[in-house]
Structure formats: C-alpha cells, structure tokens
Length: 158
Picture 1: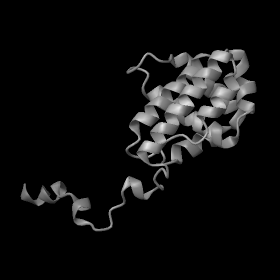
Picture 2 (picture 1 turned 90 degrees about the horizontal axis):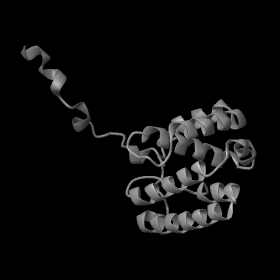
Picture 3 (picture 1 turned 135 degrees about the vertical axis):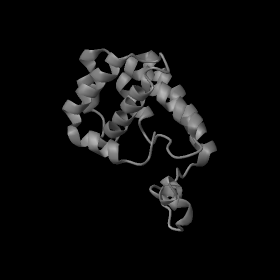
C-alpha cells in the first residue's frame, strides 16, 4: 500500500515555477474601485438607454471595456445584470440588426456574457434559457464560430 503514497503528494506545492491564473492575463488597469465606479456609471447609462428604447446603444455601451480579473466581483455582477436586462428587453426580430452594428470585440464580449448567463440559469431568474439561446444562435450566425473559440480561449473572465 505504501508504494501508492506518491499519488497523494501535491507536486505543484514543490514546484517553484507554478503558473497562476493571474499570470495568463494582465490585471484590469482600473483597479477594483475604478472598475466598480465605471461599472455603476455604465449600468445606469445602459438602463437609461433601454428605457428610451435605444437597445443597440445600450448594448454597445455596456459591452465597451467590461471589468475582468480578480477583486472586481461586484463590478462584474453589475455589468452582467445590465447585459441581461438589455437581452431581455430586445425583440427577436431586432437582434440581427443590433448584432451587425457591434464591433467584433463587442460581439466576443457578448458571447462571453451569454455563456455566463447560461452558467447561472438555475441560480437566478434574471433571464430565461430561451432568450440566451436565441441570442447565441443569432450571434453565431453574424460573428461565426470563431467568436465561440475566442471566448473559450480567453482567460479574462467577465
């Protein structure tokens, strides 16, 4: 039995060259407080644009420079709820035109938020799965499969 004890040794604890998740991307240059303040401002602006009926402007605003990295969880939550509000406020017929108006980087960020929303479907009642799947289908038609690959390989979690 003792010949299998080596399987319980944590090799990463002994290795000096451990690769941490923070080594894979640069931290958010705004810092936690700056990211939170900017997320609050953009969330408020987005809600105002949605109430005016400017869905394309609201989506473009909230997808510009979202918070990422460690220590900005509240900013991430505010941004995610604002994105989900925009997604819920859009008619299915308007989705392709809105998506074509987004820059490729914004399309990639939207895909990341779609996956984040799908991951939290059971935990929150902010959005339904059918809304997220409709957006995913339309975004894949507009941006292509490369959008999915870029989001899956990006280490900056939104």
